[in-house]
Picture: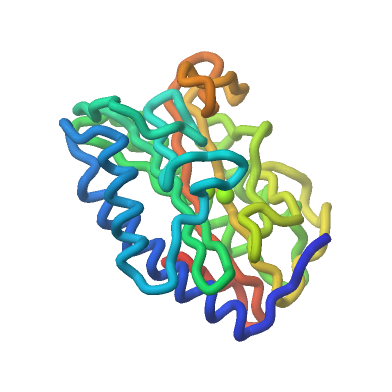
Amino acid sequence: MITLKTPEEIQIIKEGGKILSATLKALEKMTKPGVTTIELDRAAEALILSHAGAKPAFKGYEGFPYTLCVSVNENIVHGYPSNYVVKNGDLVKLDLGVLYKGFNTDSAITVAVGDVSYEAKRLINVTKKSLRLGIKKAKIGNTIGDIGNTVQRFIEDQGFGVVRDLCGHGIGKTVHEDPKIPNYGKRQSGAPLVEGMVICIEPMVTMGDYTLRQSDDGYGYATRDNSLSAHFEHTIAITKSGPKILTD
Ligand code: MG
Ligand code: MG
């Protein structure tokens, strides 16, 4: 069931999204050689809790014991923070959620640490741009398939893989709500986008094949062929005046 949000609820989600995006920006700066991923998690939790009324959205959600998902290189999402020491050349994916006044927001970035290859930079830029293009399609009159189709075509034209096993989602009082937002699909297919929908668009892109396996940590997902991966995510509201990014 798709739960539509009122303009007042969307305003609350936007306030939570501001806390989330400020936290992700601070974490991005901290993601340097020598930092451990558990240190990033602790910083994320402290930063979120420094805002009155804000809580980590992922902590305790489906048993996840941390604030931040950290996935490095071939690992793409749902990685557990650990004593792993970030090193030069890593692609570090930070995925974070904030619960604020009863509503969740969800956003992710990929950080290139130090010197990464030209192809790795291109992977990150293509993923970021595919998210921008997908967001542009998130408007009344289009369908969920229009978002996925646009994201997929752009990524595949650039020679990269689009993950099929995981997708974006609606969001609100719970982190994952209907509908599912795949990063692939056919134009004009799937549910129509209507005013008041709040969704997370989150392309997951691979340098090689798009099929996944369980990560070595036993929790996250990684590319089966161990190729590098990138992930960006925003929480978006469908409004009369077009798509509104709530985690910016
Ligand atoms: Mg996320
Ligand atoms: Mg998400």
